[in-house]
Length: 327
Image 1 (tube, rainbow, N blue to C red):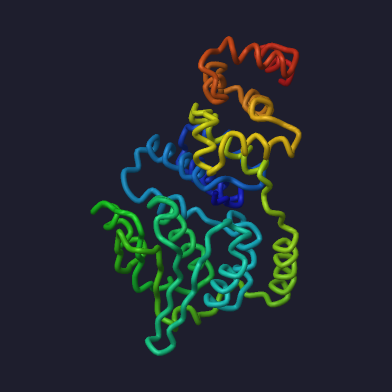
Image 2 (image 1 turned 120 degrees about the vertical axis):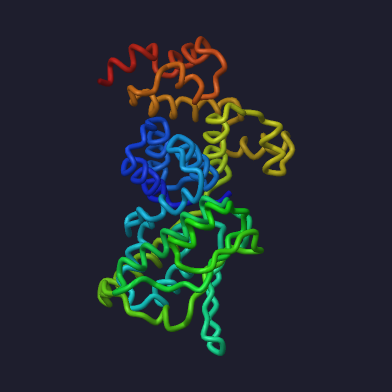
């Protein structure tokens, strides 16, 4: 499972607010993920696609989202890049510390001195077109904020199919050749472009931030089996698809082995789902725009009476009483 820094969820939230899109449920879910520090990539994509449908953006929505980028949205990696002395140094730092931004994805940065070309690429088909558009838009917008004039790309390869309209929008935004259905996702430019200086360069701050980034990388724990499972349960609840057999197939474990793994954490499947539901209920109910009917659905219950009984068991109050008590 690919996880993003939760501040990348704030990028989506900032775009929602910038465009005055009324989507309280998506904003609430993004806020919940922010408290966890990470957001699953598939969850980010799902929320972005839902917002795109509401906003009725038919093509290249990722371009709009990515163009809202600020250093904050990329976490410490964003600030590291800000204080580098050149585009090349900023990209080098990104590749070195990419895991602070997204897990289980490895960027490749290749410089061909003979041809005078460079390529920044990722394996294809890992995400979707909206995410590739968003990350490309964010990267170029971010860099251009600290250049005297825009970075000139040679080409961008997206690994997914794109419409004629999407291609037109991307060509206008990036001012370069756009290709779809490529074996990998890649951005290319000339060597002289990446050697250009950044106006925000600060060697002293860069030194301090790199020490901090190295420390975070060393201290960053791997998500435990239970942590990963809790994240997946939240995703399944949202889609109303809590099915143990299906989950076991996804993670390539038999139900018996799965339960043995849970026993090591002194819990079981039923109790874990119940715990995650109670945590989500405690967060969702604080948002008055979420009706009890919607809350029932978000927690994966088919009937409101079942949700009401569970809620009373968790908090010793009915949902209505609890919402009134926290006002």
